Image 1: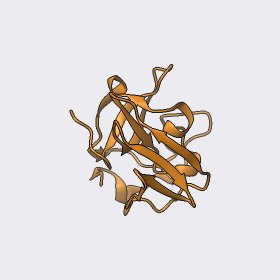
Image 2 (image 1 turned 120 degrees about the vertical axis):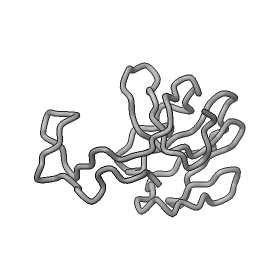
Image 3 (image 1 turned 90 degrees about the vertical axis):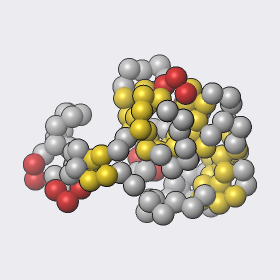
Image 4 (image 1 turned 30 degrees about the vertical axis):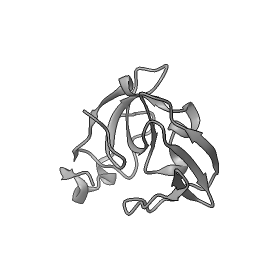
Length: 130
């Protein structure tokens, strides 16, 4: 699988065995920067129609090494991603996410997998990822 910008991917984060869902923002050889709450790739503003949550903290220009990608979560101000642990090696890419199988506005305290049924977002279940 060859990742493309905008893809929602399943990754294994460096120095952990956790699998997370993130969006591909930059590809090898590109430079990613966040300024004025906007993401720029190679100095060009990145169009993000899927993104209602703009990041608020700046990120200096970062050139992505060979065999790496730059990923960010869609919930930008509450996401651990390449802004914190750097570019992601391609070998940590597990695949492309295609469907939302569970969506909660709030999880159960102390549980990472379970969802409180009162907070299920039924309209999102089993929809394709944009």
